[in-house]
Image 1 (tube, rainbow, N blue to C red):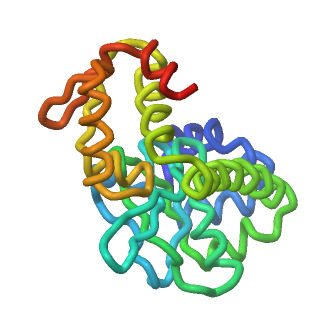
Image 2 (cartoon, rainbow, N blue to C red):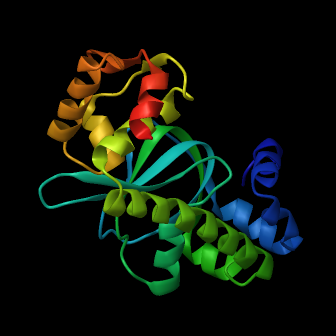
Length: 224
């Protein structure tokens, strides 16, 4: 059974839980458990059976796909106050997990067993409303990613990503070229070549594991 402090934290992050009958709340908080996972820990592998539904208390989960040649593409992220929609979908359909889930920032999770999810949460209208809102939010995020990959040039997406990371100001971004390639859904060699071109134009300075944005005004001009 969770402590009163843990239950209060969950109620604050997931107000929908307050709408459950006291009996169902007792079942949920007795069966679920709090776990802490370090950065880079794999939570789910592709084609695994979903035994739990995770509620993110703190930290970030990254849900991504891996191509046969080893390239990654981020589908969406699940942060504090959210649950993993892919895990929910697995519970509804009985399918295996369709992607990979990794802890991007050390996380604290409330793990609800699949059987308890079906017996308690799945039957409540308030929970279904919460899921619809969550699905809409993540669907919009995923559609924006797919649209960018399908229709926008990689150099534009890179420039926009640099500006977003520094909030359109000068600043330091601590990312490797490989990590940026994962974010943009492209190859590391492409990112390195484009960053080299931006460096030659005086827009950025490159270092080991970091990028200095020197001229955000020029980046905006290139974007336009």
